[in-house]
Image (cartoon, rainbow, N blue to C red):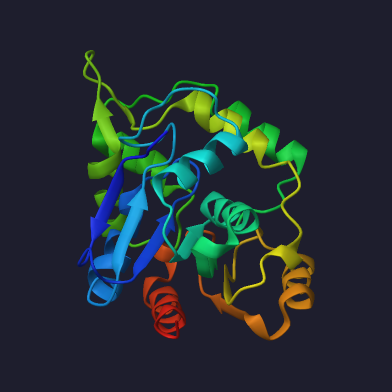
Length: 255
């Protein structure tokens, strides 16, 4: 299935493909593209299956997400992936190494414990509808202690839709989200298969990438790995935009 793609920059410029995390959408990369990358690169950021303006059809498996990405993008590019998007970049690199020139993994979700994945999936089993945008903001901002208010407000403008009853919900399929969380319990490809220049960037307050996992990257990639720690939590492009954008921009410019 071909995905809906958001684009910035000149089509003839070198490509950068950006993959968002679960519950996200391609426009999460707007600020990074417009303020840092589009002057030099053609930035392409899809809405993944079940998210945003891409089709929401089943199956919602990891394999289906990978096939969607491969059907949508077939040319060599640099790749940026946040959270689940980082896992997808690794899966693509294992399947089609010739199209992944370098990989920036932003707090990637590679190994999610089964109990935690089930909790996340169960949370998505309850319909999420809000009487107003203000109510949605209050609910969304609880877990985003380091995120500037204006970024949350931009997110809600893009991601909330009003139903026929006048209530608001997010522009994604909740069954897809629940299924995809469970898919993240499957083991990732061997780290040794990511034999390309790799930026591993983690949030200082995030628990998604542990010290042991960072060591697996280091042992597998050696001099190919660049490790960076930025302030804030898992949402590194929101919590620490300047620091994250600096590292990503510098890393991609080295290509």
